[in-house]
Image 1 (cartoon, rainbow, N blue to C red):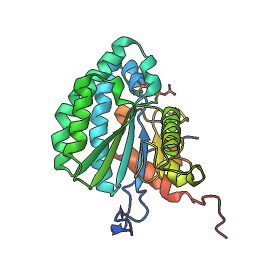
Image 2 (image 1 turned 45 degrees about the vertical axis):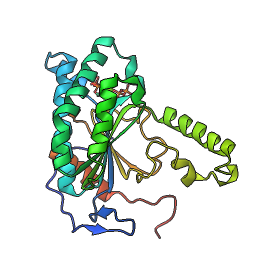
Image 3 (image 1 turned 90 degrees about the vertical axis):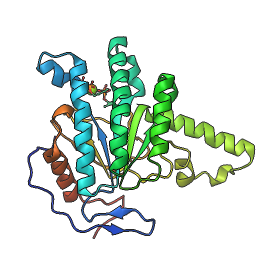
Image 4 (image 1 turned 90 degrees about the horizontal axis):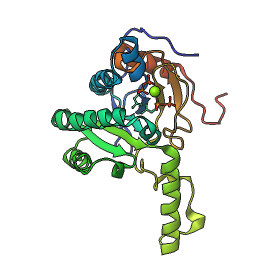
Length: 259
Ligand code: IPE
Ligand code: IPE
Ligand code: MG
């Protein structure tokens, strides 16, 4: 069942700051994660090359970041490129990395200005050296920002991330800095790429597909999932608002009982 679209603007309460300093707005999820899917279908339906869909998708990213700030979302994590997307034809990979390069060069100054802190998760070593450098610079230049924590998953795969965390935990045990018995859920999460970030409350996937495609498998254990029929390049404020409203109607129990 996919959630339908078009909804009135979301009514939200005033912002509060919790003990950890995280700003929350009542009714609005603190952390929204988005699987931005459907660029190819968007282009195909218009008789355009896939790159046109990816380009339009990057405009949707800009709109979404602005909307997230407007709604008082503190953490936004977007899935831009999966570890499995390297299986795509070389031409599409080339187009996507070119778009990423341009996005980094054109958007960072504005994101910095808007109070956005950027992080990247995923295997960045698979990108060209100049892109790796731009990623590091973007993270460094926005480190003091806290209005919106924007994390972009690039060459990211959750299974790969969990295996890397297991290796890092084993290395810590072997080095004597961690006792195996102390490796609980919290300690293990500290070895993931998302260490220090709250878990997503809401995961949105566009394009009508209803799967996680190796995205935040550990972190989304109790996230609410909302699947939208809209293709990512067409994602607008009204779709974001509809997903937030759907979230606000869900009852989260975390395995406990409410009665
Ligand atoms: C999402 O759009 C972007 C990436 C995965 C890089 P797709 O390229 O997957 O678009 P569809 O699913 O083929 O329509
Ligand atoms: C998931 O979309 C990855 C991103 C949106 C970056 P895909 O289009 O790669 O996922 P599948 O192949 O349909 O599962
Ligand atoms: Mg897809």
